[in-house]
Length: 137
Image: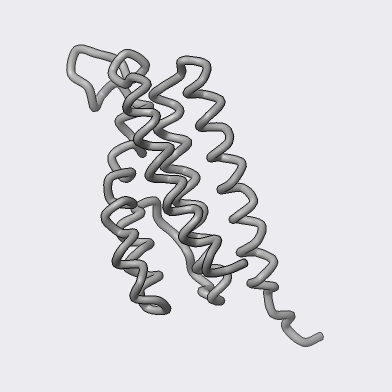
């Protein structure tokens, strides 16, 4: 039985759909006062969008959570990812600090973020998701 090739285009589309849903979830969380989690979901939306792009480009081994690193990987196919890299880099800080109190001496994540943080995360992640969508849809 021959090895079947993965359907990279379908996998990329699947990851992009989840990125879009994560962005909607970030907005829901922001609207309901869960600002730290809205920031995290924004990071997740951007991460999944970048992974969607890499799958779409038939990258077999897509891994990691750093948006900066994922943008560097994407630049191998499209140098324009250097433009979105600065937005994506800002989202990297939301991966752990938004969820783990160990990163906030004397405080907890749910008290450390406000609506402005959530709005910024959503704005940046929307830019990343839209940037990817323009390239794979």
